[in-house]
Image (cartoon, rainbow, N blue to C red; front, side):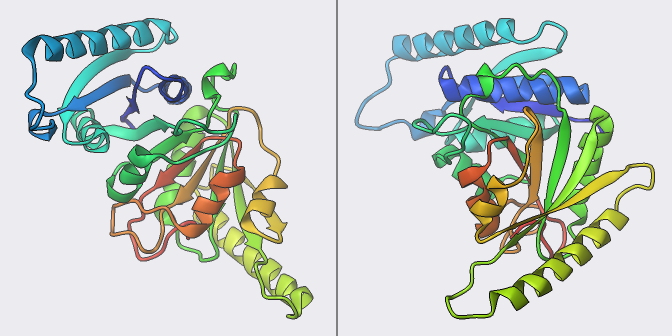
Length: 294
């Protein structure tokens, strides 16, 4: 599978995290890396404050300098370039750049104020996750400080329904091209009201999780061997916290069943995962009525 990696870059810690994850993915996949800074297009500026030509030129020059500095600091063996684009919003500009460069992934960093190693969705991430037709990779805070040069493993979080073909295809492709193992994980949370027979619910949940995992495993290419693992817990957050994670690995989730076909929408399970997830998450658009993680 071909395709470039597009990074939504800003001269901030979040931008550095996104660039680091983009470099890790590009090196693992043998992809071209594009760093993109998006500036407001002319029609989105405040009409009450007339633009000054000198100021606009200064902003453009500054953006180019930021990109040049970021590109130089990326691994030299990568094919990487920097671009300044203009759009009504940062997310819109990234989606347009993704289409322009035939991107397989758009990478962004977490919002400011995040705990080290954790995610916090900002306005750009939220807009992307509601409008992009290209998978979006979210880099947790502190990614730039990790010494992870390639992906060590790919994990796919399979939801409580089978049939996440696009999620499995993307996970299998990334694992195969990166020459690393694939792990299929089923989250089995037990958010149930007090007083119910949780023991019986657990038995049924375990059986269903095993069934879904086996179905998902059967949809993978024969030559790709995948390990399967349940992640039981009282909540989604608890289940994720009890999973083991390799430094530098990524987890893929499918967008919600509420998403329009070939568009993203972060479902409730995936959103809860982000609270505890210490590794990057890649959200993959659905192509059919089912989603990977709801």
